[in-house]
Image (tube, rainbow, N blue to C red; front, side, top):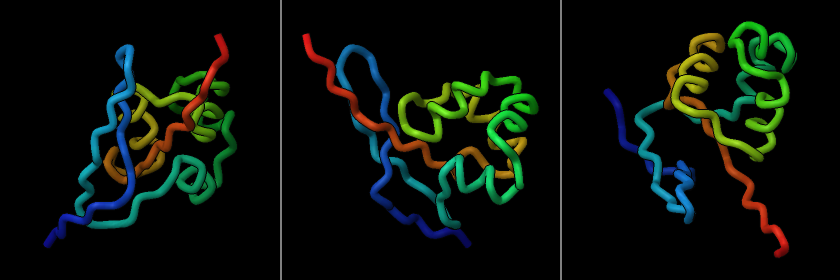
Length: 98
């Protein structure tokens, strides 16, 4: 049985403005990409090679500088043995001077 649990996690879609959409997560605990990678005993480079994603992008996903696209999320989840919804990708807002 799955229980709907709302956590303070957000999926951000950036299209000129930032729109925050709450993520509804069913069951299980969310974990960050870094936590999931550590649990598998993988380095960023190992994960990058297995997922065919640039290692710099893996670092940016973990630090919140970038969000992975859908295909990247699918690849990461598959290699880490998780469902896409089990991974959380917090986005760190950056303010740039003009």
